[in-house]
Image 1: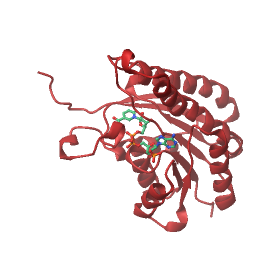
Image 2: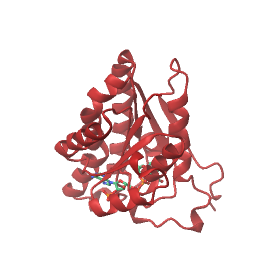
Image 3: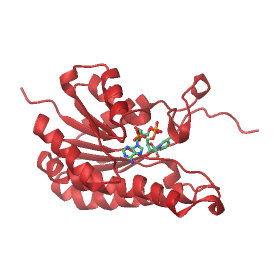
Image 4: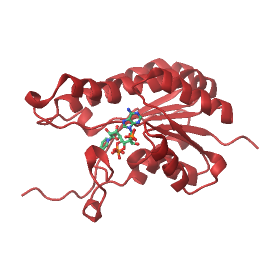
Amino acid sequence: MEDKKVVYITGGSKGIGKGIAQYLLNKGYRVAISSRNLEEIKRAASNLKGDASDILAIRSDVRDPADEKNAVKSIMEKWNRLDVLVANAGVGLFAPIEDISTEQWKNVIDTNLTGVFNSVKASLDAIKKAKGYIITIASLAGTNFFEKGTAYNASKFAVVGFTQALMLDLRHHDVKVTTIMPGSVSSHFDGRIPSAEDAWKLQPEDIGEIVYDLLKMNPRALPSKIEIRPSRPPVKK
Ligand SMILES: NC(=O)c1ccc[n+]([C@@H]2O[C@H](COP(=O)([O-])OP(=O)(O)OC[C@H]3O[C@@H](n4cnc5c(N)ncnc54)[C@H](OP(=O)(O)O)[C@@H]3O)[C@@H](O)[C@H]2O)c1
């Protein structure tokens, strides 16, 4: 029997990343999840429902290329394979340009854009060997710009561009690449706390379902960019 496939999800301690991890565990994958805080990522791993031997918690800051290399090293040491990267870790910043400091700007770009680059670079050899899949979690903010969105829009437009170019590079190596661009998802994003009022939003497992559908798709088919939004948002008055 073939070994279970291994998925590495950055930013997996909560929100969308954790939802993807749970969905894929339910479907028989092994999952490695990472975030900046060791205690939180360990707690998230212990809260996932599944066989503990199919779950790995890693402390890694995607802004640091050495952290990402070590994350992939520990996955390879544990399972000796890496089939799928979900580059999900990201932060929000919504403020007028006058209020955005250079430090804040750097943090958004370093996390949302360079962090994706770092996790892709660290995973590339293993994923090419596996003829696997790279999925980035961008946003509808990667195609629609809005007020107070300079930093966030810039980071997500760039992730969409990066991912589409990456797709063109890697399809010749039998590696699929897709960017998922969600609208509002109930999560801890930008300091929010998921609540009953979020019922109209997408739920993290909805993004998990898309990831699973992509992984199961016929090898000849490649949806390279997916927009997904809540079907019934509140009507704006
Ligand atoms: N929620 C939405 O409406 C929405 C819509 C479209 C796209 N997105 C995108 O979806 C992705 C996930 O967001 P979410 O909504 O799930 O937010 P979330 O609930 O705040 O989760 C973000 C995750 O990223 C981790 N993270 C943040 N900075 C990191 C870093 N430097 N290195 C490693 N991990 C880091 C966080 O853990 P630590 O803080 O402990 O490191 C956490 O696990 C982001 O890229 C976001 O832009 C969200």
